[in-house]
Length: 204
Image 1: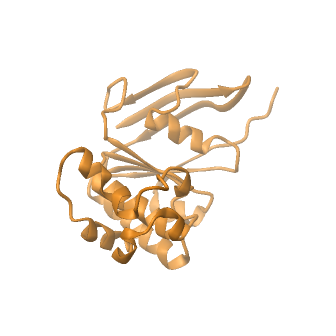
Image 2: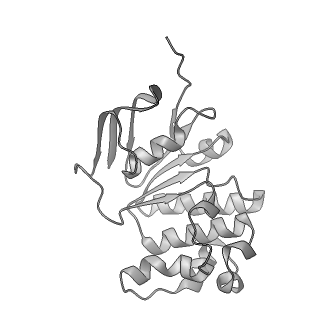
């Protein structure tokens, strides 16, 4: 499991996170809520090993750093993380290509509801929701132990939101540990029996 204990992250002498503790356990989903600016995305970065806390500790399965490929991060804005020169098919298949493994890309795309006719298109040629589905398919190809989701349904219509929520529930049931950030309390309540609510810090 991923354990963050008493984590504080400070930018320009301002604490974005202050003494935050959370545990992400395999096979469960933990929700993270709170108003804008309280550090929800920063906390996901800490859990992914991308942001170094100024104080506190983080361990990944009792190790000092995460194993390569063990964590997948689903970003809120997929256009910021997808190579615009790659087709959706290349984006989805890259984790398998790195490992030199064969993968049925179309079957994975079917699972996330991505039309396989879109696999030859580039990010600029598809909607935000379609690109987010491609990012979800890429995560399925990676087969991570932990999935950290930053507003996973914010780019999706109600039908797609329902489908993605079902998929995330299934991934947790298959043994993945999920952390889900969302402003939508209904999404958190549906996905996560337990949640962490971050609050704004008041300067003293």
